[in-house]
Image 1 (cartoon, rainbow, N blue to C red):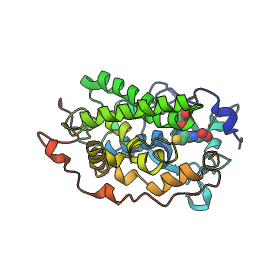
Image 2: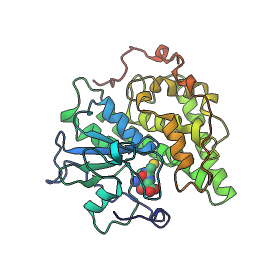
Image 3: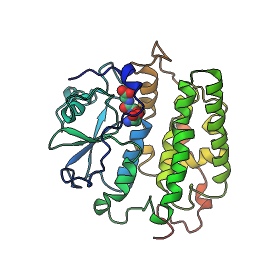
Image 4: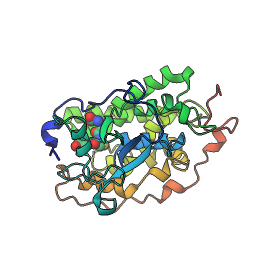
Length: 319
Ligand SMILES: N[C@@H](CCC(=O)N[C@@H](CS)C(=O)NCC(=O)O)C(=O)O
């Protein structure tokens, strides 16, 4: 098992070494039962692919392995599994399948990671495009009546919005956390909250970002919103407002949370522990995990049904 120095590797700008879409290469066929998606409940980038896998009914097509959300100095570990071993891959550390794929690999062994169970090699860790692959390349395996969450006529708009989310919101919270100066922090903070203000207004008249149906963009926004009050507001200093202070955004997030695939894949305790108690927690050296905030509000009525015109959720307009 190669030990990866997180500090050295983090200086690499990108860690996405395995970017070929499954289906694009002969040795990576789109095939049921062949791949295992590895995630950690803490990780927003991995969480979104798990939500999409559930919405599209790919649970029996691509299996799921879960590493402990508290990352140790050995990286991600399968310590939640019996004997600390992933039952399908037979490994203790995620880095093992990265090294199987490339013996010279010295980057960070990140989640999400898609592993070919026949070779026990990581074949894909392109977190930016993974949900889009599940939505397109894996279409033949979607469940009957699966929602079209990446409808062709909206792809350009969805991609543009996703780019904004990536820079200003999904990564925006990380920019608040990792700013190297007061100025940098304030810029990230203003950019983030300006975007949230825009969304608060956009979501005042429509149930989801593009209307009456859930799209890939809603999933990308959700994974940041659901972590906002439990982690980003406090640990990352993204604290102009909490999510619960935005009436529309908060109701929108609860609406999604209460939709199968979202809340049932959200583990607030794992998220908190992962951020506050992982081994590289230089911003929380004693690894004390906060008790609050109270998350019971996530199950309260959201009232957003009233914004749905035809009450057909999860289906795009052109279907
Ligand atoms: N692969 C991407 C994003 C995925 C990512 O950063 N995942 C985090 C968890 S949210 C991770 O696995 N980190 C492991 C590490 O830093 O060693 C990257 O290069 O930054």
